[in-house]
Image (cartoon, rainbow, N blue to C red; front, side, top):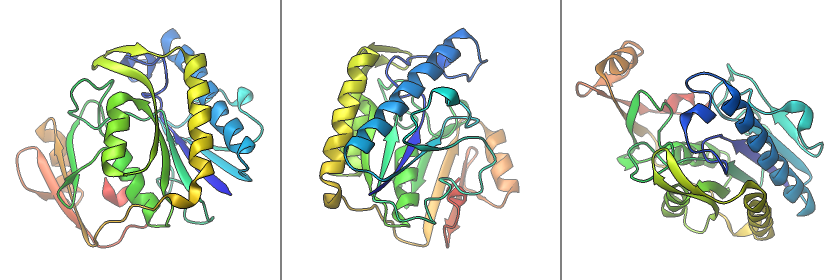
Length: 263
């Protein structure tokens, strides 16, 4: 059994504001957040190993892709770190994976009472749709993984993240590690307890791995992005997207190879 994990930061237990994510500078709070992230990653790798996984790939999917404290990573996994990737999820297309875990994810932009909600960019994107269906980064991940018949089997994050995942992917396992009270205020489950819950969630998901189905979309796909400001739309228009409004662009995607076509 081979498992691919993508780890984001905003949905990790204990993370409630952008100071912790490194968006506005990498200070002391960001360094603490890296420890929380690394511990949750280790929890997932340990649980996957205990549940019988033979190969576990974990990609650092937050910002620059270099947030893990690498010297503290669990020896049972292999890790993808760094930026300038050639594929959204490197290696997913080259090895047969049985499932995709989205660790520490967040709700799509515009979600009420969701911690650090955004899609792709917390400062420039406002709305994202594929074939008329509103999606966030969970949906993007599911679409790309679905190209290789890899189902999303587990999503962790706040309550709105888990609701979003369950709505798009019926039957997916979820673990809610905190409850948003606003965009930057949350009621958290202590990280030690959250890790226990995540471990249990991983084992539940792997225990019924054959029951999950990959997510598919009709091709060619029409992607529409609405930004917060016109300059972001200007940039996409120059890169070949069709302008359909002051802050909106769209594009018909004939084929998805790397996943970056969706952005």
